[in-house]
Image (cartoon, rainbow, N blue to C red; front, side):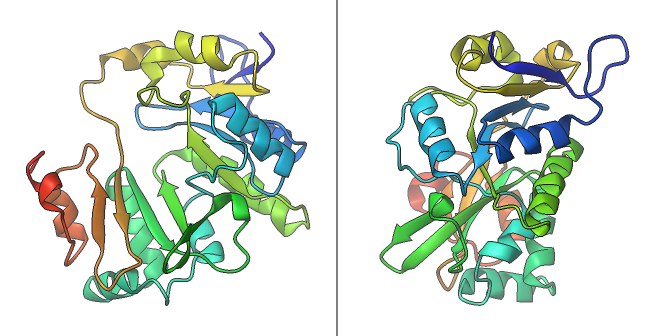
Amino acid sequence: MKAKLLKTSDPKQTSDPKHSETLANIMLKGGIVGALWGHHLYFLACNACDVKAVERMNKVKGRPKSQVFASPGAAHEAQEFADFKKSKGLVNSARKMRMSEKAYIELLFKKFPLAVELFAKENAPSSVAFATKDGKTIWIAGHSTDKNYTKLLEHVRNLRKSGKNIVFAGTSLNLRGDNTLTVRQLDKVIEDFGEKIDAIAIHPGEKSLKKLKYSTSSSAVSFTGAKPKLLRLGCTKITTLKKYIPDLQIPSKLLSTRR
């Protein structure tokens, strides 16, 4: 297998205590990395500023080479690359929750799996900025409760602060057209990506996670309008989303799926 297999921490087996730093450095050099760190966190990632890496990751996924990736990180990246004030839905929801925009996004990411759409700043890499009729937008899919993901983003940020041209660009760990994979399908991940990417980081207890009984998909909410709008319903109940997202607009086709 071409990809280096990194175990996050396991004294009984080969592990890399600096696995997050290792992944960040692989990305900096133009590599593609994958991770399966728990029931809700599985992704492919590369450097959004590296055109060849972006094209290569799209090829690995079976996508058009210039396709945009969904997420450049978490709340810190949202603050760096998203225009909070232009994203009126975010401003209004944060105000009603009596929080700053960044603190509000951090709260949402801690409560449930969620991807948020915001207007993008000019400094957002083109590989993570979507062209819409109202202007360029950016999607942030946060996993702030996962320490491994947090460490990886910190290493990427530190490289950027030191002058390196690197921004996390993440997408789901599956081939185009496939259902979203979970950690229960490690063998399938290795079969699909083991010869195509440079490293795969896994949780040492991946086999024990097969017993998980709940859905892991994230919901998607756009904050670009005056009011937030639910675009995709994931594993979180609508009642829970409405509790933390004031004035959430919910299309009728989603209301009938699950409350």
